[in-house]
Length: 266
Image (cartoon, rainbow, N blue to C red; front, side, top):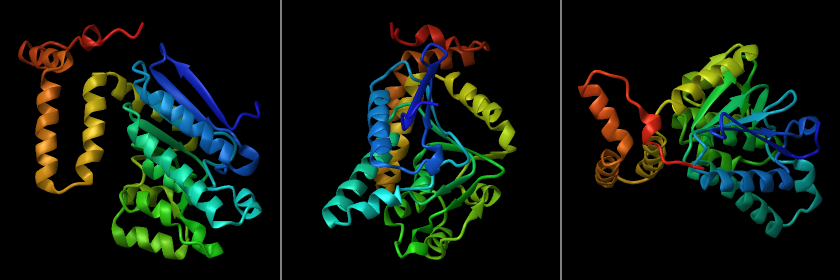
């Protein structure tokens, strides 16, 4: 196993990318090196028009145990902590900037900033063994930055209870609350991810990318502004060859040939 904190794998003519957190001995805690690697990877994926789906996975027994507390304790200064949390925030926001959907593949524990990672991914599939917590409060630290992502995924009272108790919730509870999309047997995770990826890459890339960008923009503004933005986005989407082909195929009662409408990435 390589010592690199993050592994990257392309497949299907670079359409599907898997990023694997690779610090299994530390339960994939987010060290500064791992955050840097994630930031670079998501930045590169934002500009790669060949990518249609991204899977965020992890090696070892856990998905991610949050920040690396040993690193944090080694340099106890406000300047350091503000820089570290700003770096982490940049990584979280970079996930939303990737035009392709990012799917969390979760097994084992996802705690604190690890739970935040799951919440920031566009989609999440969890193994039945997965457990989630924002447990900083157990060491006297309210998970303030994870709270931003968590509260945008699950109901307020459920999010606040997790934040002030630090207790774990199960994979099934996470699905009920909306933190993950699907829960499957842990040994079926790859098959379930593959099925989800297949559904995504079968759709026009442009429509998915435009839709993802609009989805997050409209969440953060008032409803009138959201509808105005959505209307403009739909009008632009309708002018894309993929949408025109899809409508034509529907009217002609045939399957759309979207591949022929996609721009070449050669």
